[in-house]
Image (cartoon, rainbow, N blue to C red):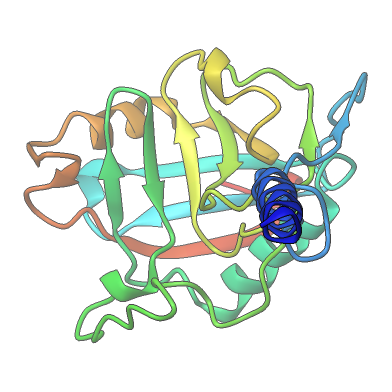
Length: 212
């Protein structure tokens, strides 16, 4: 009986240790909480992103990009835009905080793939958090609970969102067309999904001085 008690005590300690380790389980080999770059000033790239909407009423949205803050996410966004990935994708999530797009399952005629959850098929992008505040018009990278799962989806903030600070990669900001962002945010919705598709026609990456 004494030996049995010792054995049970040892097994109990092992169980407690296993539970405590899973609460800070590494994600893709890294801790669940990503490092936050502090004191960094965003420097706009020579190129900007121009979102052209399928419906003329929604106009265009121009965004500067910050490679010095989030080089990996900016590179991914430019790559996907140049490949035409965003053509036909809708803003599938609209609420008082953000408008969000980038889910490939929302393309016309696309059959959703639950295993991929509408991503680009490319590897995920690791978190590139900074202490830049989430003010109005910030371009952020959407992700899951895993901080290292940014991929193709992005969102634009409609107002100051302090709760997003240090938690989502910032990689740009709207410099023209914020009124169009608000128009998109104001469409009739079923929950967070627009009742009618609000579809992106194309995202162009162009030199700032050539943007019309």
